Image (cartoon, rainbow, N blue to C red; front, side, top):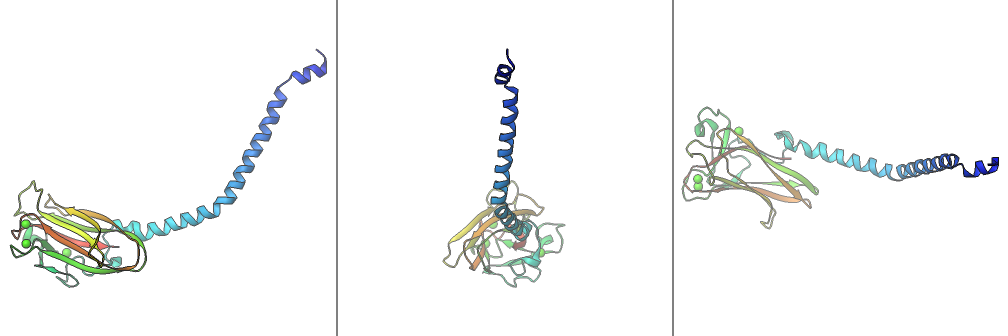
Length: 211
Ligand SMILES: [Ca+2]
Ligand SMILES: [Ca+2]
Ligand SMILES: [Ca+2]
């Protein structure tokens, strides 16, 4: 074979050339893509960070930033409305549960459907969580599948934006969370309504927080 024939039939050079061209094209595309989207990604990650720092802490019981007044009932019924409100020390309902004041649903009166309500304002569209702690008083046997309450967030027309059944089975307080999305600023109401036998015995609730 002549030198020129060897050269023409040799493919290894062509592979190298392809490699260089392709990799440089890939790098160029990568750089162009980065320059195009990096600003948007930075904006988005900033938004996510802001949202998480304002809303992810919604998983903590922190009254400082709660939209509710007296969510722990230590000022008894201050801030709360409703029907047949009963607020006593946790230890009254569950021996050994201590002196923290809690609300019971249902309340004193058989025949009254007990409710606890509190209005709050939202100043912008918001996704958040209602959190509270609930337990079952010892006067009600376990397993329990009826005694408890319905928690709802309602708008000014009475339409529920979110609702969740709380039917505790424990003498220890357990956390309950209800996500809620407000599409616009406004005044809204948290409402808890007893469910189960209307016999003046029910679930107890404490530390209600809306971030
Ligand atoms: Ca309390
Ligand atoms: Ca009742
Ligand atoms: Ca009951």
